[in-house]
Image 1 (cartoon, rainbow, N blue to C red):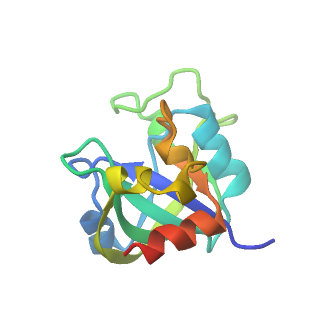
Image 2 (image 1 turned 30 degrees about the vertical axis):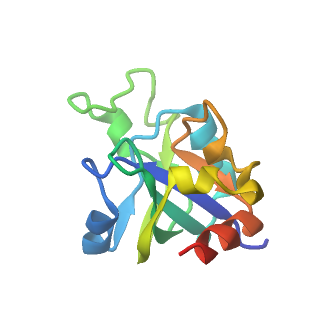
Image 3 (image 1 turned 90 degrees about the vertical axis):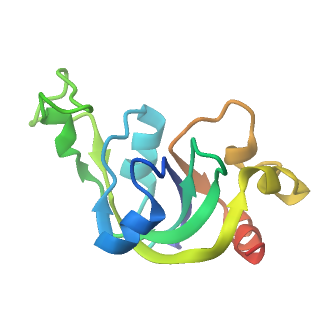
Length: 152
C-alpha cells in the first residue's frame, strides 16, 4: 500500500511540536472521537506522513512534520479511573479507543497559519479549512501535503 498523509492537532499548551522533538516519539493518546479513532485504526500505517498542527492558540497552524511509528493499539488512558480520558464503558478485552505512536521528523521553518491555508484555492477541499471540522486526526491528500510543504 502506498504512503498516506495525515494531520494531527494538538494544543501547544498540552503537547507541542517542541515537546515531541524532546521525546522523539509519543503515543497519541486521548482521542475520543470515533471518526478520528477509525482513521488511526483503519488508515494509519507505519511510515505515513503527519502534519503536526497547533490548535487553540494565538496562531494556529502547521508547525512540523512527524510520522506514524506504530500500528494502532489500545489507548491505556481509557482505563485510568483517575485520568481525564477514562471511559467506564471501555473494557480491556474490548477497548473502544486506540492510538498510534507519533515520531518527530522536523519542525517547519515557520508556522503555516490556518488563515494562510484558507487563502489558497488549491486547499478548498482540505478538511482542515472546511467550516465546522473539528477532528483532531484527519487525512491529507498527497497533493495537499506537497502544496502545504511548498509554502514553507
